[in-house]
Amino acid sequence: MESGELAGALERLDQVTRDLREKCPWDREQDARSIVPHTVEEAYELAEAAREGDDAAMRDELGDVLFQVVFLSLLLEERGEGDLAGIAKQLTTKLIRRHPHVYPPEESEAGRDIETADDVRRQWDEIKRDVEGRSSEKDWRKPALPALIYANKVQWKLDPEERPANAGAANPDLDRAEEEVGRMLWEAVAEARRRGVDPELALRAVAERHAEGLQK
Image (cartoon, rainbow, N blue to C red; front, side, top):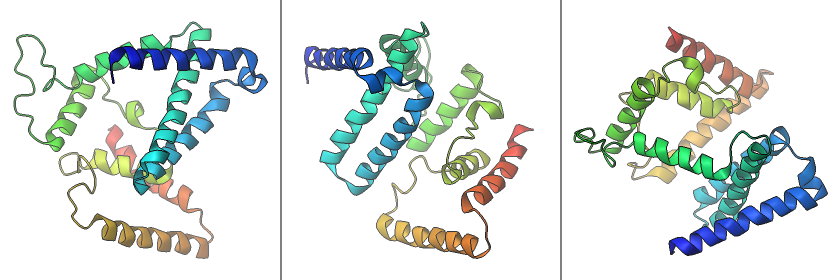
């Protein structure tokens, strides 16, 4: 795709989003709080399309997620707190800063020893901590995350040297592994129901207890 074609498509999407915000009664009533639940839903639908390897569904869901980004950026613009161009520039700067092995700073040899995906992830964390100052628990802890995602994140923080950069990527029998782990999680949910326990709250509580040790 040529840059002009991409720019034209994004400009058209931006204009349609502005038209909807101005002329559609439903879109006019929305704010960030009302829209973000839809953003989360679209992200899960995209994840499902990716899991199933459905390229047509991925194209559709990626479009839905992209609209969420453009719409939320417009809401920021209306409040004078940013716009889509500014968000794109900020993201580009952050990506370059966090990938010195691809974009080395001038007169720097940073990134020369980066050879694996695990090396990249460790460097990523070091840059967030040492360069961006994101060293406190509150900088990464996201209470709104579902308990299973949050527990996975806490375990990564507890075991930074051994965690996989891309869970399951090197597993030659990934489908079987997913089936077995899924069965274990299913049984855990069943056990929670038998005991009258909410599995989401139970896992969340355990993950938070483990996360407390990371604050010290």
